[in-house]
Image 1 (cartoon, rainbow, N blue to C red):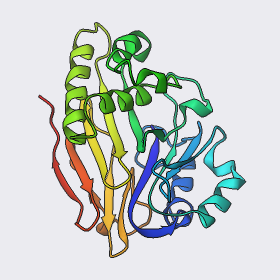
Image 2: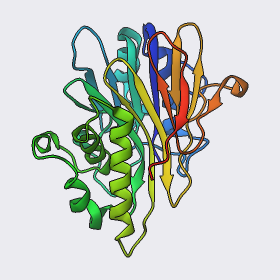
Image 3: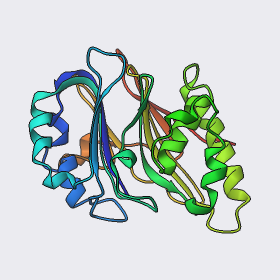
Image 4: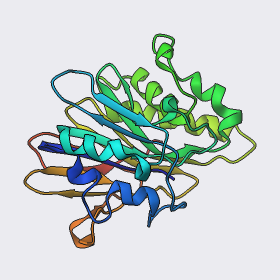
Length: 257
């Protein structure tokens, strides 16, 4: 499965979490310790907020560990909120359009997980995307489809409620399938101010998710970035972590009924 990190806090260089730590995201892309696949080499992406409403983006289909540009970018780009994602593809091609994070109108999203039997269920899932958002569908992943569906369900007013609505509808689609009906949804969503990090699964165990806070800010990661595991807190399964400006991160139950 994929590996990702999200950061919210003081403005810092991206390298502080993406490339420098002992078990940085670059290291995890080559040797993940808490994933079903240790190699996550099917592309890489960065997304960050600066002076504009829409985030900056960098996507590359080469593995993160072989991209020399990445270290230079992470040293010179500074941001108060950024995402980074190392992809392990599940049933869709390796391409720039399928690299995370995904963005639309100031929103940003990345995902570690899958919808079981995606090839058969893709059309039903894409029907969850409203017509006025479907033009933003550029890739073929289940992740991008979930992102646009959540936006269409009212994320601007209630991001957690919109995600709950889509999970309920996905459970209905999966329940009608006569094949594998598993869903893993470990994802990060942001409007450029607040990060909503979900750890949820249906008929499966959710992929890992941790967070750590200090006076600079909060970093959320698929697995700890260093050996100080006592300083990292695991997000419980079927919970959402909310990291907002000026307040400590907090977890809340996320169990769409």
